Amino acid sequence: MTHSVCKRCGGGFWESEKGAREEDLCDECEGKPAPNQAARRSVEVFDIPSGLGGSHTVEIVGELQGGKVRLRVWYGRATATGWEPWKDWDGYRFDADRAELKNKRTMPLFK
View (cartoon, rainbow, N blue to C red):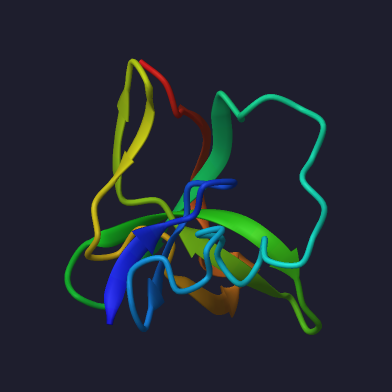
């Protein structure tokens, strides 16, 4: 397994071998037409307890039933050339209760 970064959204994902998808797109972006807009400069994020003694910085990527949301973890840093993902958690997706989200803010993806 190889950890890759989606060339479209910047999210991290795992693939069986480097370049296996040829386009290097995550499951969320694969099969969808490319947007006609420039790369995002910032993202609306929240904090959520990680269950490991700290918190994750997350973006809401989908609305689910029963007050739940699908979240994407942002783990890395903004640089002059864009988001630099750190492989451990960046791009990880999971579902949680919206009520758990705290500290809404805008996070820059470029320095």
